[in-house]
Image 1 (tube, rainbow, N blue to C red):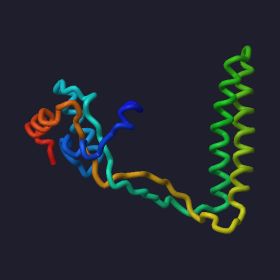
Image 2: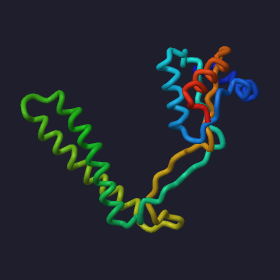
Image 3: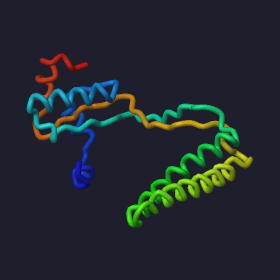
Image 4: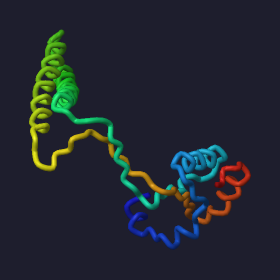
Length: 161
């Protein structure tokens, strides 16, 4: 959707153009994939996630050692990137020294920042985690009068829930 189309989005109108509701995002993508293979004009489709939830998956305890190692690893990656970038403009094998120096400096600074972030502070998080935004359901919505055609094609393929 372009910015102009997003600002004019009307949920009531979209409800009348809903082709199907899927409990899993991959099912909605599979339906669009099938419609694409049949030559359906998929540029007239939207997948809209509703009833959003934040899911935080705890991956382990965050010890000071783990914080320092995570910081060093991240810093080394950033330093490696900048070392490669600078190495592109250096003659001969000087680029190798820049890459290694960048990784070493990045790892050192990353470890320092990791240590500083692990120092006990009130309200500090004692665990590491990943966060994902997921929807309760995913509606496949057709624009431009293509709703019935999409329903028929998905119904014939057995992809309607």
